[in-house]
Structure formats: C-alpha cells, structure tokens
Image (cartoon, rainbow, N blue to C red; front, side, top):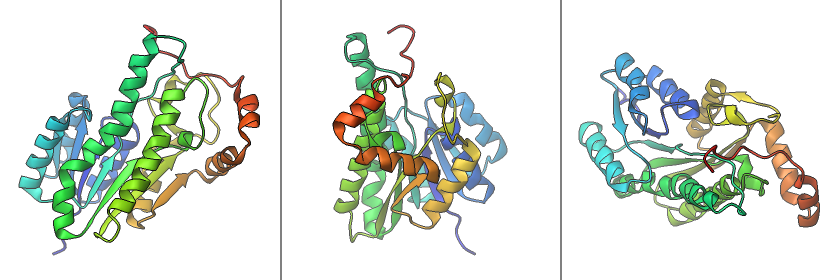
Length: 257
C-alpha cells in the first residue's frame, strides 16, 4: 500500500493555508498544521483526528517550530512537502515612527519566518535526498507598491530567498517551489478598501497551488491576468512606475499606528 503524503502547512488557520491543508486531508494525506490561532485549527482535529497534528506556534519562534517538527517527524517521519504560507500584511508609511515596528514584524514573519519554517526539516530531507519546500510569495513582490512598502518588499525578499535556496539545494533532490498569488479572497485582503482585479477564491487558489506543487513547478504565479500585469509592471522604467503609482490607493495602516 502506498504511504500517504506527509505535509506541513503554516498559517493554516485561514485563507490559502486553511484551504490547502483541507484539500490534502481530504485526499488522505497526513498533515501538520501550524498557526498562532489554535482554536481555528480545531476544525482539522475534529474532522481528521487520525491524520492531523495541530501546532500552536508563531513562525517567528524557531524553538516552537522545532518542537512541532520533532513531534511530527517522531510520529509520521519526515514530511514530503513543507508549505511556508504564514504571512501578515498591513499598510506602512516610513514617515511614521510607529510603522517601523510594523515593518519589522512583517519582515520577521514573511521572510525570516519562512526560513525558520523550513530549517527543522532540511537535515532529514537531505539525508533521504527528496522533499519539496514551498514558499508562498506574491505578485506584490514584483514591484514596490506605495503604502505597502513593507509587504511588497518582504515578498520581493521571499522570491529572492527561495531562488537562493534553490541554488543552495541544487542536486540534493530537494525541490524549492515559489508560489506568487495575485489577489486571493482571504481575511487579509478583506481589509483592502480598493478594487482587487481578478480576485480568486481561497479554495480555488489552493487547488491551483496543489496542482503546481504536484507538477513540481519551480515558479508559479496566478491568475494569469495578474501575472501578466505583474510582468508589465516589472519592465516599467523607474520614473514611469513612480509617476503611475504615486496616486495609487494605499492599504490601511493599523488603527493604533
């Protein structure tokens, strides 16, 4: 009998992470789900008690992630796929001193948190010469966006981090997959007070991501319309980009900022 896939998903309490974990569980995989919001993870425990382990951990906390990894691997073995999906977003403006702390939190979660999510599994993956490390980046990382300087630059850093990691692991049997969604209907995007073209439902996004992982796509951006827009943005001359986006609507800052 073929062994079920073993999968880790961070940021699994809502949005893409929730729907991706759910899809894998429905297909018979063994899944470890990670989130700071433990109560929202109970859904998985109630519906797939024999196939899921839930972990209350912040991806900024390497010790907590290591404990989760040790528990999962002691029960099921090394995961076949690790999806670093956890991320946060908030409007930031450099002119406000209060936003610097938010900027730090976004980078610590979106970029450093991704490395901390992968790290506990790398040794074991290397020893068996296989595994997939999947990082959720964003089309927002293709170019700097006003009012989202922390978020867009963090996602640009994620894209480059995953590219560097792919070079480091080349020839080891470990695949590094970069996923760049456009607008996806999640609690994070619900706060956006501006039009979001080609908005994708979270369950559909999870299906497309799962397919990209199964096909070992090194780089996958979706939907295609937003990928095209992102590519056009990427080739705009810097002055033209600054002019066109200087009056673009901004993502809201936190109320207490």
